Amino acid sequence: MVYQVPTAEDLALYLGVGEIQGDRADLLLAQATALAEAVVMPLPDGATAVVLSAAARAYSNPAGATYETIGPMSVQRPQAGLYLTKAEKTALKSMAGRGGAFTVDPTPDSADPSPTWPHDDLYAAGDPGWL
Image (tube, rainbow, N blue to C red; front, side, top):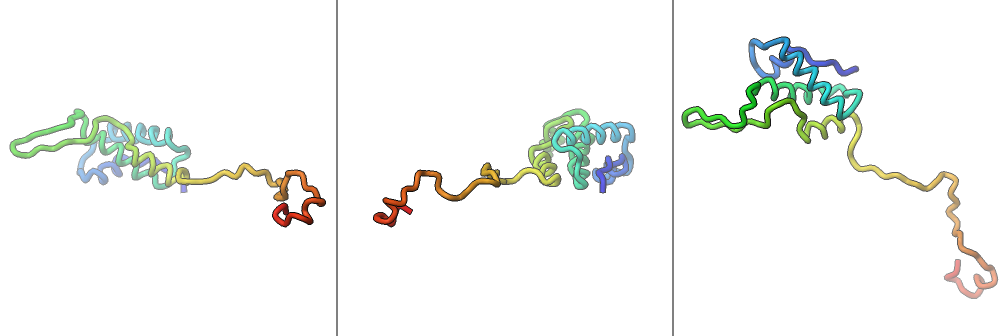
């Protein structure tokens, strides 16, 4: 299955709102997709969750407010703007099969496992540790 950019309706459902500004939502989804493609390309199937999350952050906070107080209630909002968090970048890499530990064996296939130091049969008979 190939990644498909989420629609404005997908973003409205994700945000839990009945109405959404379609053109603005489409722009944010396209830009969030471009940010995700800067991390991995092509985008894996599960990248929709990351794209929706980034676009929803930007859509729900257009003024860029970081702290809001109304009466006795205070809310601190995440950083304003369209961006990917470190966790979202990690998730994209993981979905694409990248990241994690790995080893590289620099030994060529033609390597001979026998010792390369000089071997003298005269000393081998008297010293069993030589072999």
